[in-house]
Image 1 (cartoon, helix red, strand yellow):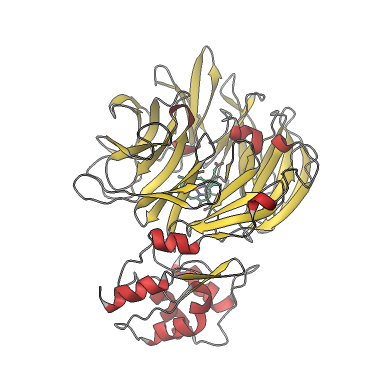
Image 2 (spheres, rainbow, N blue to C red):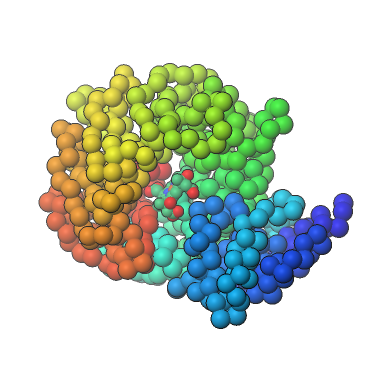
Amino acid sequence: MNLKQVLWGISGLLAFAGGSIALAATVDSDSDSSAKKDYLQHCASCHGEARLGGIGPALLPDNLSRTRKKAAIDVISNGRALTQMPGFGALLSEKQIKAVADYVYQPPKLLPKWEAKEIGASRVEHFDQDKLGNKPVFKADLQNLFIVVETGDHHATLLNGDTFEPIHRFKTRFAVHGGPKYSPDGRYVYFASRDGWISKFDIYNLKTVAEVRAGINTRNAAMSFDGKTIAVGNYLPNNMVLLDARDLSLIKIIDAKNDEGKSSRVSAVYTAPTRGSFVAAMKDFTEIWEIPYSGENKFKARRVVLEDYLDDFFFNQDYSLVIGASRPANSKGHQKNLTGKVINLDTGKLVSNIDIKGMPHLGSGITWDYQGTEVLASPNLSKGEVSVIDMKSWKTVKTLKTEGPGFFMRSHEGSKYAWADVFFGPNKDKIHVIDKSTLEIVKTLQPEPGKTAAHIEYTKDGKYALLSIWDMDGAVIVYDAETLKEVKRLPMKKPSGKYNVYNKTHYERGTSH
Ligand code: DHE
């Protein structure tokens, strides 16, 4: 072990201070540039000397892939509103600020390690869960609660789904992404942040009870059907991390490495409740992996080798098929034109092609019954259309023209409508309402001109649909799902997703799981 490795090891020893982490000193002897000195002097106390994050987010190229350098320079100069990030414009020259930005976009000389030791050291139990009460400290229908993620200032709101009154607002980790996952009884909710933090929140007691950092750059987390295990899919390191849902202690790290020794980023991991397993999508080799969470092969990955890459997918109702957006095996990384494929999850064999071009967002697909068959509707990230596919013949029943590419779709068994947003382009402030029985767009709403309107979630009974106005000065708007009239508007800070306890824990067909 050389000096650098020793120092990386030391940097992984995390000390908790008030729920945030402080990284021990790391020195990279090869680089003593002035930018690095400025970084160590001004940034390291919050972002970690090894740039792995602390009270501020990790500043490694992978973690910054969604932030343009120009925006980063602006944040370093002027600070970030509603966070603890101060501006350094008065302290550092423009040249120094640009050099610090260049520095944080450079890959580190050694890939940071995040193994059992680092995961274990990051874990904290904020409360003794056995000592917390078993009755909610508020009155509401516990099945009709919503968690609303507010990405604007990294908070979440617990919302009463009958009165639409906020019950509690609390801080989350920086940049929570993907759907938070509920325990089967709905008492706990688990959040995953892009920087790898998994936080367990006790809804009954309104407290974050435990946290662990399961990776450095995380995609998402899935909850097992029995509520016992959480699987975390990571880009960095290339692995899946299984955690005990009770205290977030580490069960197992599964390296995403194939037989040839090639390693892959894990695009996403989902639960397949009827199979008692997690299913993970691999970004860098043409495989999907299934990890049973019960039975004799518990936690042993089964590799399903495919012809092409499949990094975003959806399941049929019995979880025997995955319906995915596929990239050819010889393609490199990101590509604009994907094709739809239906794959048998047991054999990895192609069942059917589906006729969707562009970038179908099948992970956001929903299903409903239509004229004696079941159809799947998927938005498209690069084209203004929604595809409706027959799940028996796999033929396209209809392609609906929308006012631009969309991100999310939603419906509910109790509603005759499905909603499709227009997330990208000049019409991002519009949202379409589709009649599920005619497959026609029957209404296009523009709830707040100029501001992105996206992501619907229904109440437990399907009678109301909640929409996000995706803006710092944003809102959650409650619509009567029948009349499509606005019922209430709740101011929120860039609300992204919202998640209804009943719909999620009952795997409602109209929502993501
Ligand atoms: Fe997401 C879910 C991937 C960008 C907001 N997003 C998911 C899931 C995946 C995914 C795999 C399902 C995980 C789950 O819920 O367990 N998202 C990706 C991407 O690959 C992409 C395009 C690029 C990236 O950098 O990751 C991407 N996503 C975004 C955003 O830019 C969004 C709009 C804002 C943000 O928070 O980063 C965004 N993604 C969301 C939301 C969900 C989500 C709100 C949960 C949807 C749900 O209702 O379940």
